[in-house]
Image 1: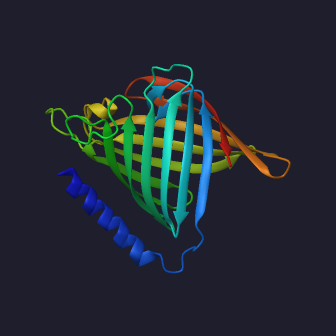
Image 2: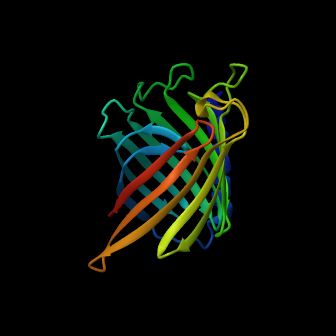
Length: 234
């Protein structure tokens, strides 16, 4: 069933691309970088201690394919993660799918009852002063709802960027709309309230070294995290 869902979602993305790529940038661009973070916090969830998080991607006419990973370097028992994302962006609109994989299982095991892959679809719009994003797991190792059935775990996020005191800030609030064990939610709840500041240090007028710090609270789990990290972009 999940293969059919993936094919349908890919068909929607490709249809949108075919309708909106006219006049878009023809140049193929590539990204390569790595983040070093004090703690791996994702949507308000604690997924590991000090981690290295490399990324590699290519983009063309608004369509991008990227891979991202995370590996713990202070606690080697942390799960290793490898994600692939296919995304399309046109002006403020974006749509895409992500394949999350965690090293607790075989990479090439895709059966729903055995896999450690999670497939997620996302859609959003960036107004500039505010961005909206909705994500839903549609296949793989998804969480369960209160009836012990597939939850189709979902997450909705609001983000607002602003500049203050010479720093670039982002305020974020994320909510889980219904019960799922994936987010430790037994119903609608707020799982992510965060404020992050970034300073881009320029070295020799050529190299950029963004440094970021912030606070993230998870009201559902009653946790508060102090974040810090540095990005190396090549």
